[in-house]
Length: 259
Image (cartoon, rainbow, N blue to C red; front, side, top):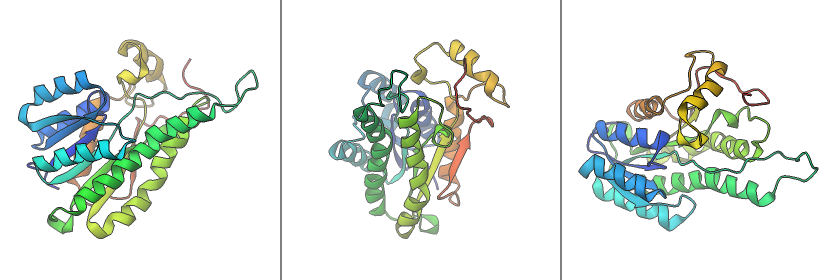
C-alpha cells in the first residue's frame, strides 16, 4: 500500500502509541485524523502536524462519533488506514477479591465495552468507508490495524477484564480478515508487550526499572516509535493479513506482575 496521499484515522492518537503512529504516518505522506477524547493534547499535536492532520473528538463506543472521524478522514483523501490504539482506561481487579466479593460486573462490562466493543465499532465502520473507495494494487482498498496486548494471551492476576477484552481483539482478527477479503480490506492486530506510555501513571524511569529486567532482549521496555514502525510496515506489506503480531522483546507474563 502506498501511504503518500492516503488518509488515515488513529483512535487514541493524542498520546503514547497513538501519537507515535500519527507522527509516523504523517512522515510517510499520509493525512491523519487524530480521533481522541483528550482535546488539549490532540489539538496541540494536530497543530504541530499542520495541514497533514486534523483532530476530531471521538468516543470509540459511539457510532456517530466514530463516523464523524471517518468522514473527516475521507474528506482528506482516500481512506486507506484505520488504527485502533485507544487506551487509558482502568478496570482492574481479581475475579474474587480477598474479602470474598466478586469482581464488579459493571467494571467488567465497561472495560470490555471500551477495548473490545470500541475496537469492533471502529473496525466495522472503517471497513464500510473503505469499501466505497477505488481499489489499488491487488484490489486492496485499505488496512485496519487493531491493538491487543500480550495480556490477551497470558494475563496477570487482577487483569481479568482487560485480558478478556484484549483476548477478544485477538480472537476476531482472522474472522474479520476473512469477512473483509471480498472488499479488499486487510485486518491485522498488534499485541504489544511492555511499552513506555502514560498509561502506567508514573515516571518513565520508574516504569523502566520495574519492567525492563523481565524482558529477555532488548533489556528494556518498548518505545512507542517501535510500535509505530510496525504499523507502517503492516500498511506497506500487503501480504500481511489475518495475523496477530507480538512486539514484546520475547517477554511472557507470569501469574504476577513485577515486584
